[in-house]
Each structure stands twice: as structure tokens, then as C-alpha cells.
Length: 110
Image (cartoon, rainbow, N blue to C red):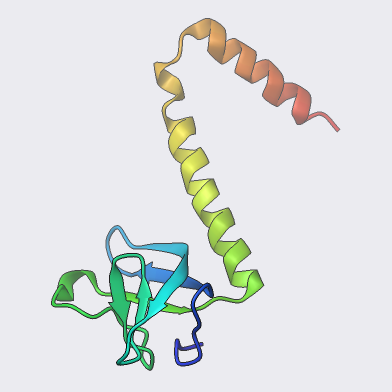
């Protein structure tokens, strides 16, 4: 879905592909007199959804979001955050790791 029918307050998905790409949920905060859609600090073309500016290496796109897309992106970002936090477990003391293991073992029982 393009941004042609976007209104202030609409929820959009902002994405950037490539290395270190991401997707995030954001809100439309303004529509300029020329029709560009403002999300955060960036302006997006209403037809293509492409961010205006000269950063060709980090092109961002935005489009109107469906409820299913919003949930998918929120879940994906939460999973990435949890995976990062779990990767830091090796910094915990042994006793804390044992307590975490007990919780995981109890939760995995049928």
C-alpha cells in the first residue's frame, strides 16, 4: 500500500533493506503542502514511499500498514531484542544461569 491516502496519525511500516536493514512501526506526523508524508524526521514520497534525500546507500521506504503487518514487525523486533539479550547470558554469574535454567526447564515440561 502506498502513502497516497495517508493521514496524520496513520500507522506505517518504515523499512530499510540491505546490510543492517530493519523494519519499524511508526506514525504519520504531518502531510506537507506539496503532499509529502512526514514520519519522524523524514519525508516520504506519497506515490513510491521512498524517503526523500540524498542518502542512496541507506534508502528507506514507508507504506501504510495493515494490522497483520504491524503485529509481524512488532513480533520480529521483539524476537531480535530477546535474541540479543540471550546472547549476553555468558556474562552472568553461574548461580544466575542455574536459576534461569530451572525456569526454562519448568516451562518446557508438558
